Image (tube, rainbow, N blue to C red; front, side):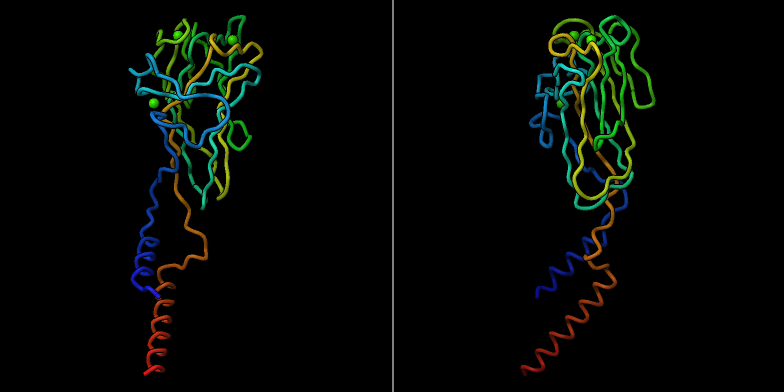
Length: 225
Ligand SMILES: [Ca+2]
Ligand SMILES: [Ca+2]
Ligand SMILES: [Ca+2]
């Protein structure tokens, strides 16, 4: 029995902070780990001036709803007070209120709607409690002006186990592809990791356990002597 290793493990367990932990983060500069479905790493073009770096995850899927980019997560323990943040680009011809809309961007968590907004790159920038508007100008791609935002959401607590966050476009006249598309970047999920499962001893009971183990070892040594 390696008592030093047990003491080290208990010290780590006792020092788990209550502050927000980074559960997932990706700036898509080198990979899209955790994502599946539609979308691909794409050069940011003009979005590079707005904190998007050199690459972002762009999805130009067509259809209503269009195929989603899906982030799959699996937690060993529950995540309390989770916050989801990301940068969002409405690329090219989003037609909220003209004859080629509506064009919605949607987020679903575990199959349940978290967000749905009708974006308009011809008119005013969108405005709601989750959005911080960054820019409305031609940033690249296939023509038309583009928009950039920061998004922030408080999620319901997430239980231990698997979860999915889906990002997708929808709308009766969502054209997708080279007409209108979207990108996300700088995604982060933070929250408080709940206490580890109950089979890991509390520091106090751990100390008692170690006392007991120490007594057993001593008894064994005595018996041998
Ligand atoms: Ca990036
Ligand atoms: Ca454009
Ligand atoms: Ca459209």
